[in-house]
Image (cartoon, rainbow, N blue to C red):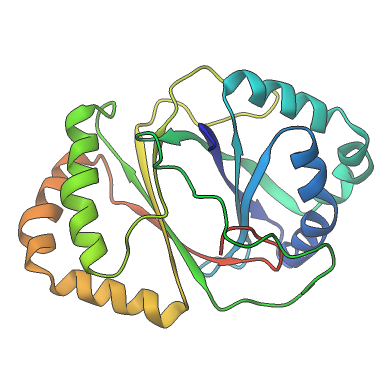
Amino acid sequence: MDRVLELRQYTLHPGGRDVLIDLFDREFVEPQEAVGMHVVGQFRDLDDPDRFVWLRGFTDMISRADALAAFYGGPVWQAHRDAANATMVDSDNVLLLRPVYPGAGFPRPRSPRSPLGAGAGERGTSVVAVTIYYAKAAIDAEVRAFFMDSVRREMAAAGAPPLALLETEPAENTFPRLPVRTGEHAIVWATAFDDAGAHRDHVARLARSRGWTERVKPRLDALLVRPPEELRLEPTARSELR
């Protein structure tokens, strides 16, 4: 199980996303995992044609530093970094995260990742929904319990039990060559739906739930420094998470 994760959101030049996805799926998955990382998933943002979102995991902060140094100092990145960087406007929107409790990280898949070259260029139908809640203060035991109990119960009843429930990892960035966002207190809820219609149905059910609107949402709003950030993500052909 990954005890440290990165949620990475890249802003790309117009027309650059499919170029980066093709390159990423072909060249960057296996080489990262060969040096100790776990490429959890890579996605198109359904609401922003110029955003690419991906997740990768690590055993801990020490192994993160070692794995990143090995990959970004290695031959694969050296060979393809110019092509990758040419697609990007900004790659510094990165949250460093950890599971809120043991077992709350992304489960390992029940089937292997699609092989290299399989489905290149194809578009999927499933939707991975990621909601980022920004709290006013550091996440404590009371906030964790609220998410694990009250939020989880209402979300599951509306068809969205979590695939993962994550929070900000407060440790110092062990690989400063790649910046991460600091000074924020985030809880990240991730789940998956068969398609965009199933996600819409969930949103509608939640809006009709009195437990959500009368009990959970008011308390949730009081905890937050700003409205949640909601991402609707379409897995690429070789995304493990889908």
